[in-house]
Image 1: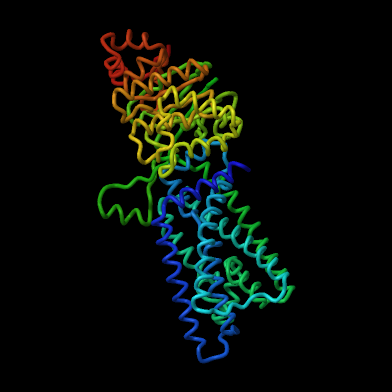
Image 2: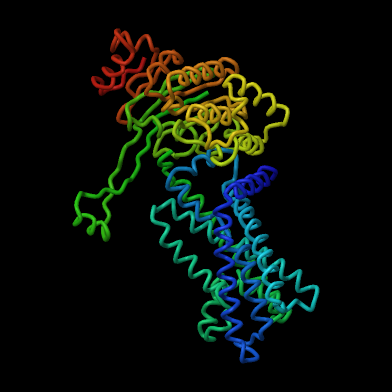
Length: 264
Length: 268
């Protein structure tokens, strides 16, 4: 286990070395956050609520969304396909290291760097703009929220890992991955709450794993769910994690068999 | 130590005829053909041997090394390295061998080599004391004490190769697969790398397979060579034997003649 914590540490070191990329990424995130904030503030300026959200709930959703983007979506799994296609995967396969665990801790480093920054941005913005955040009333909500975040993080990692494994069979995994991420962020509720959509579309999207990445954890935080719905949601997360975990294992095994180690 | 029997690797690769029309056809129907990278190769290497594995570009050298390291699963045949089947990639096997590819680096580009060393220390679970001793020893042999705290991107190619070698040997592997370790280096650095390989071989009784297009690497280090071309084994025997048969004048001539004239295996 120590080796994977060292992976976490070395990626932090590398992240701190690459300051320009880091600040650019945070600037992009801040622009998105401010845009969403003003958009929803304007929309709710002359009405008490929209799609079941009052002003403080919606603003809390938007700010929470920014933090969850850092925790859930920040990832370096997009590098996997390139590592496969250009033979850099060989460097990992030659060593006594589990590549999935390695990439998970690499992602953890990326997530922690981004989420700490996102948290600072959100706190700063709340303070400057005097934003009223809607905090949970019950202590247990925090516990469920944290479990839901951990579940979301693992679920997104596994799905992204599977997408990265496309590299074993094609050098053109960039296009499918772009579409996957776009659909994932939309259907996860990472642009706006899914309640804004028609009930029919909502019902369809909830059959996918993506709502459990952002929409569900934030609904837990906003206490919009009954205790039974919270438990049911955690169960669904677990189901998707297990299912995709099995798929990831099979895809990885098949992929390594097909690996040509080109370019190395 | 290393035994391979009937090792064969065939790749299925996409084939496209030249021209725009063929590109459009390829959108709907892609054609594939089999490329026989390695065909029915057999040889064995004893503990502590330093063997040159030679052939022209595309001969199948690197593919064979990739199978011996466990990166590729052969289409047919068997191999055993240190008593393990390489492509099962067992941890106990991985901790005892290393593969150095001259055109590849495992060092972290933005960080000093020390950080890559520390990562390998954790990955290979090297005890702290052994790690300290090995680093000292390798750094002295390779003269890289002053370079370890400099970001890798600031090192010259030769310095990087030396750091790469040190990083690959921290776990004291018993089997080394060296794929063109002197490629791109100047003559002084080539000599240093060769001296180091010889010293490591003698110090640890390590078994080494070396591929190189540099005849000085071969003549200085290897007493035995294995030649392959078009995926087939051409020659397996002593360096002196190779020269006697194919080119008494020089090793280069012997190699040229062996690759040019021989279609059937000559195994000594």
